[in-house]
Length: 251
Image 1: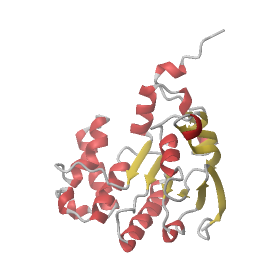
Image 2: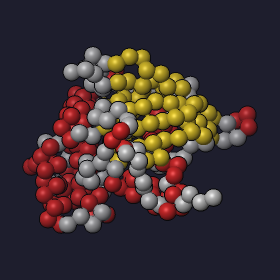
Image 3: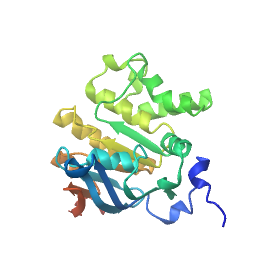
Image 4: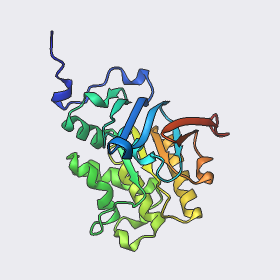
């Protein structure tokens, strides 16, 4: 019998990824703690996300949204079940393979922005490409394009402390797109923003999904933002349901 070395090689190997959904989640279980005090965050969660969709994940605080996003993004491992991203089964990857996947194929956007204070907006956007050792000329061109895409072409030299919250989150969106990911994962990306600015950021994410051809999974509790999604998944008591497709799903 030939040993399957894929789990040890650290290389992300995809089998005809274009033939399936961007994300496939199958029977995910994740608990914290043991015995009677164990918290069962996910209880057999399954769903698919087709390519090119913006899918919103809603649920009350503590419902397990961040746990689910971490599993889809390869930041955590399930107790049971399987996650496939862009044709790659995450359970078949070693740590090097997961690092490669997160660097090259998944972009993360967080509520706290996560920008490096001493770097300019342009330098923050360029960080993922530096880690990937992208050619400097190509990197600078991509940074310029992305800052223009998020409406910050005139703010390249400003540091995070000189930008508003909405502008900082736009920089974070640009940074998440730096390495041309197939999947964007956003955890309450508008949680620290006022309603008007939050709506503008969500509209930007929708435009990015359409314009850049990426897929997005966005956790949010804001009903106004949920209306911009192609689909809404509701996470309750460790289970996912789909209340229905938004009116924009087929436009």
